[in-house]
Image (cartoon, rainbow, N blue to C red; front, side, top):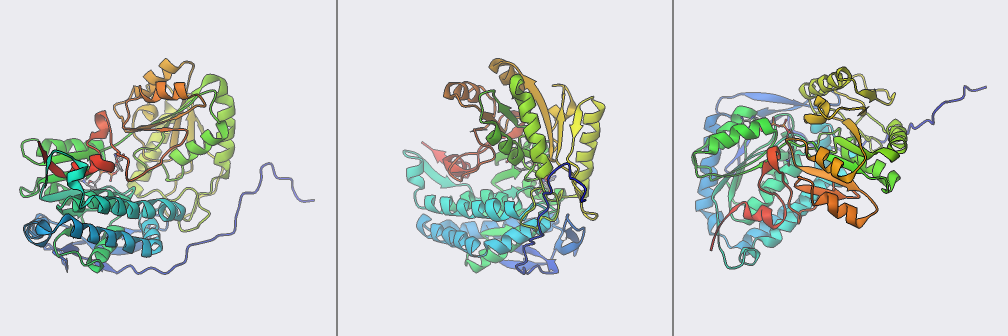
Length: 485
Ligand code: NAD
């Protein structure tokens, strides 16, 4: 007699994405339309976090490289691009959008190999959304006067843009599309662990025929980012990353005339009321914290459940966690991919230990993890004190801290009791309650009966230590313009 299994067998046959992609052994900077070797001749490796294998090596940007990139951007701004009509600029941006759509599968695979996120996420979310961003802002390029009626609209000049590793391609699109639509030129630096899709985008931009120097991509780590931020000929700094680095950047541009937008960390509250559709809410929790390994600034990392539905929510959540497939990010069945770097994995493990030490109760499904690479199983903590470090600090991993509440005023107070204010979610069947809570939450984005949904027409950004300024929509356009009455 076969042994009776206590839980269903959720295993599927592996279905790895196998389209071949072309990754060069080495990438230089993309400056003034040319691939340019680093002035210090230094390169660093970028590896696949799911296997630990080296994918390529990329140039390490020095101050001299950044200076060359800013000079190229300035020359393009003073030259062809600065003089071009919005209508013509729009055509180039549409072309970029269409080329991304044509090469979407290739970009999705490279994004997954370099960053560790499941192919389902990069294929169905990141890359299509990035193309949509270019389409959306292409449409505004010749309509800036209509976007801001009765105001004189002028571009800023050279934009220095520094982005993180969690949405490498999407963040590049969020930064580049509005900057180009408004007539600026750009020096962009991707994160050191995920530079490949930005470099592939440079290839695509060259294919789109953009004039040389309009978009320059310089790779490197923090020092390269600082060289961009501090360059005296940069007019606008757009940064997405940690609050700690955001604060440094804020200080360093404080005495200058540079315009600044900061998209920083978060500790989103996901609030489930007793009248919510619980099955949908559980799916929203999983989408909010586990599908992207929690590598999301707006991840629903704090869950607040109304006391009388707590048992039901937790039972359903744990059963759902048991079904999550952790493993090869290139497999189409995978739900939870690899942690982006060894350093980030250590940080997450440190927080998990701290949660246990603080007396919270931990649950992890008994999934098997691959032997090589960086992995963390989906993790949930209940019995979490409001003061616990796992309820207060951004973990940036698949770790959920659950608390309960009895009344609406109580949950509003608890949800707002954080230095961050990026996003939140509310699940309820009652419109009045939805409005009461959403209007009182201090968060830039609040989702109602859904979570982690993005749209290029909708502004995104934070309150408090989650930064300032908005990206997306008309607000995102205004951030790259001088507006005079
Ligand atoms: P990070 O701040 O360490 O790095 C972000 C980028 O800044 C990287 O490209 C890095 O090389 C560069 N950098 C590092 N030091 C710098 C310095 N002194 N000057 C200039 N640039 C510097 O953040 P990370 O670990 O790459 O990303 C994770 C963080 O990003 C999380 O806190 C997350 O919440 C945040 N994030 C926010 C949003 C948002 O829209 N609010 C979106 C994605 C990620």
